Amino acid sequence: MDKKKVKLSVDLQCGACGALAHRGDDPPRFCPSCGAAFDRYCFQCKKRVEMFFEEWWPEEDECVRTYSPARRCPHCNAGLEVTDRQESRNDSNYDH
Ligand SMILES: [Zn+2]
Ligand SMILES: [Zn+2]
Image 1 (cartoon, rainbow, N blue to C red):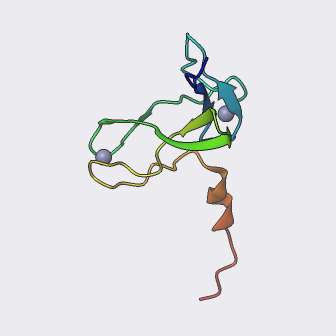
Image 2 (cartoon, protein in one colour; image 1 turned 135 degrees about the vertical axis):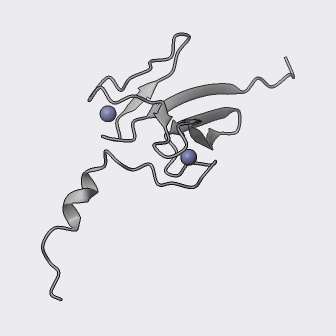
């Protein structure tokens, strides 16, 4: 009875649309909302880039871990945000 059991739930966050998917026994490989792959490969060194996770504790005995795709390659430090919508930001407001 005394033994504390931590309830761990794991979510995956899509790097393209930000949707959260619950990771159960059979983790999805693609975002259920937009179909983007959770796995990323570096374009420069061609290595698979692991997702990173953040943890938070809504209760003392409850842990939520959220995985998101890495933004930089840990091997060669190349940026991985190729599919981001923020590309449209550097449009035309340059006045050189
Ligand atoms: Zn998505
Ligand atoms: Zn790389």
